[in-house]
Amino acid sequence: MRHNSHKSDEIMLATATKVATKTKPLNPSQLHILEMFSFCRSQQAEDDLKQVLADYYAAKVQQEADRLWDEGILDEAL
Image (tube, rainbow, N blue to C red; front, side, top):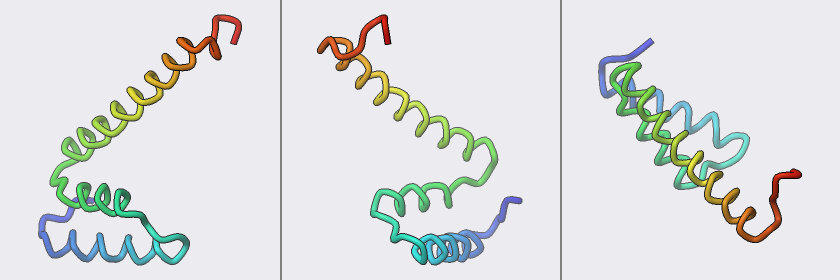
């Protein structure tokens, strides 16, 4: 369910932050991502942000795989 008011988003962000920090404090990057999601006003915006994050991490995995390949650590046998 999407909330239309900014105040509702702020309350949800504060609540999520409190719940998350009871188990383990969130680092600044995690807090920033959580805040970015609070600006999503539609399912499409949320899906787009998730895709951006997925693409970023997919590129990082590919870079690491390429590095391992170039260094001979990873090959066709693995």
